[in-house]
Image (tube, rainbow, N blue to C red):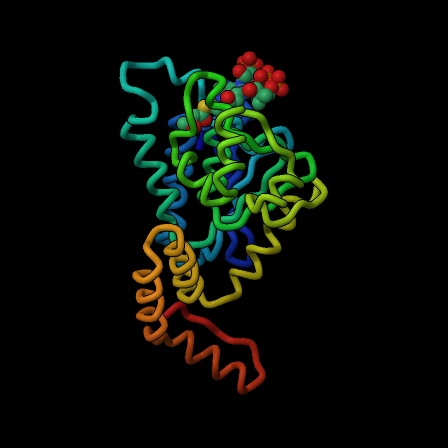
Length: 254
Ligand code: CAA
């Protein structure tokens, strides 16, 4: 891999570190394709329970690679390889946690909007500055940002291109916790470790159900939630047995 570093932690947590420091981890086609490929591998690997996505101290990611935008005749937003990579990230069924230090801008901000939980270091900043280059957050940002922070705040970010700091991002609901910058990855790994102990099938179902709240009308999602509730699993039986027997559950993912 040229643009990312993949590491495994003993507790079922995979860490993907974006690694284009000279370009502030800009999301080139190559980088996005590598992230997508590793997530495909993580999907197929039962040992991976949760993935932490991070960058470096200066940038989580400064967004789409602006220098690639002038390549070729096809508009960047419509390029098939990029769209496929974004789809893979979006459809990843296991929990995806972002650990953000530095800039999370443009596509970098859209990437965290696809993550399930976002932890930020004190110095992190977030923004959708595309308007400054006569563009807009076209990798899902115009739709996901208002769902995350509300219409007025999304309009403020998208139309001015101004950045918000980590505390504001937390107050607006984009980020769940702000920690000292040197603790960002550690904290994200801690959260991932807690999730990795739970039944993988229950975790996948829970993630899918929460996402339905943003994707489907309420009557439809409530009815789907009810159907999933009736979907008994061996892990559920094991969870109940372990509670009654006062022991740690041994989940198999069935
Ligand atoms: N794409 C490609 N290269 C980028 C980049 C990007 N998004 N952001 C930064 N870089 C490169 C710079 O060109 C520079 O490279 P060189 O040293 O070769 O010149 C290097 O990273 C360091 O950047 P700066 O010197 O600009 O660093 P700075 O500290 O002065 O400024 C910054 C930091 C405010 C983040 C500034 O780099 C910046 O404004 N970057 C662009 C942010 C942006 O507009 N993002 C949105 C991209 S569009 C998008 O994402 C579209 C979409 O949704 C689909």
